[in-house]
Image (cartoon, rainbow, N blue to C red; front, side):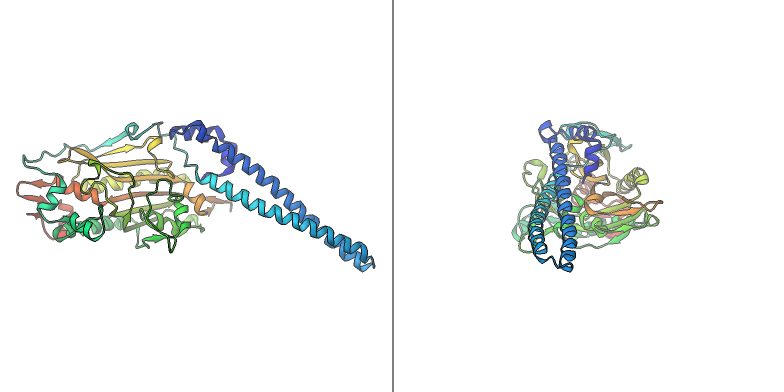
Length: 426
């Protein structure tokens, strides 16, 4: 969340950042609304404080009047105090209304894009940042897309998923389940070797946690909501893991705080249709390993590129062709200031599939969560938060079986063989 002080002091800079996100001037007018509401808040707060000060002053006078035997004057003052208290209470209620309206307005404003982010209107404006330096694999003449391979080798059963739950909920079985579990263990082991502490978080979160990372208010209707208990199924482990530090003041000596976790993730994917959702390309439930860092603001930029190198290492070990995109303003997530997406080439489909996003949120999430630290002068500051997919398994699974298929079967990448216990799925 942006600070009101930032919007006041750098209104044109904030507006320019929103234009990078393809915001119209009509939408940017919310900045004026925030400033106007803050003006109202200050005016009402001043009036309320003055009323309460008058209550205290007159109450002291009442005591003196009673002591000097001036009961009639004292009782008249008591009536005056009662009227002022009623006014102060009305002002307090009005102040709460304004503060709630101000907070609601602030929740509608996304993070300001980093200076490296270019203006854009869609994902077509994303920049290619880096590419895999090896050739795209050449498949044999009878190569198949992953949905056909999964059926042929009895690895994933979508029909049973539909029977049990509904469309978009795959059921892994046999060597498909073992490959999935191997990937999870491989990614977690690599993350812990890189210094990340493993976390197994809850899969449901409360509203405060959703608000803390910017998932709520849910502007795109992507989260599953358990209305009876007012809990939300997590769209990513980023939400519960980052919220471990909501409301905390951490020590500078604790930086960097490095956390990783495997969880199933749940997304409604409302409005998704067509060939992009076939097979494992887009599902409602998928497994993912997340890496999260809480870092000193002066070091978060370097940390972002360190996390990018970690994801590159994973894809290299899996022998998967990839490219890295730097997202344009319009394609950034709501809370991100700078995001690099990793896409893997699925050779049988002949298309790029997004498998990871690595983002620096700077102080945007920390302000919403009140995640702070004290600097060398003892002043409280907001920490920076970062996260990355390392990795999202559904599309990684699809890419592995497509890219590593041969006329004899699906060859398991060398890095996974100690985890699967087999070299090939025949």
